[in-house]
Image 1 (tube, rainbow, N blue to C red):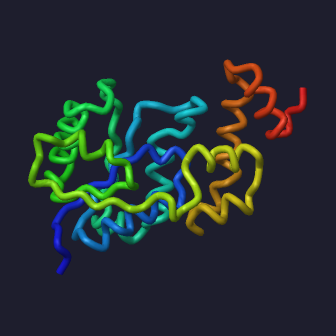
Image 2 (cartoon, rainbow, N blue to C red):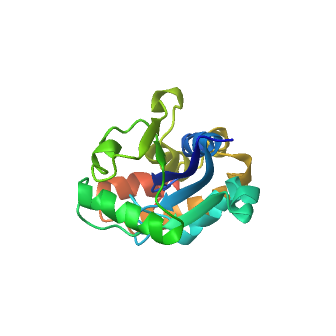
Length: 197
């Protein structure tokens, strides 16, 4: 018997890595079901938000295949609201969770205290944070690893089910680098991708 019926994990997953996986696994350890909200679902094709929501959903399903099929992990795309880190954002998150499955009883997150400030209208929600310092990766670092073609490092920081996606992810990032609007960054990124023009 787990202490919570429904938990929530929120992230952009713009480079799904073992830190994200650890947060979701923690939520699964204390919740019967977990809503994983894929933020910035309406963003893709930029250096900051390279991957589509559909691809990020596919990657999450590849890490948690049985749990997504059984309904213990519920993947929900979430467009940006454009209001910043304010209670209106929290209300929007909860409204979308409620529409998909229900109001979560707890939120599991990666040691970002700003998360707590989003939900003042939901005092009943409990918070569980994981210390991000114990996992030496973040999405920005992972995107850099992919762009540089370091497949061994990519494998170190991702679940086995994601290893086959390395060429596809790199192709996307290299394509974005080739059309970038920051000339200095584009030269460096194109060089990393083998486009030494």
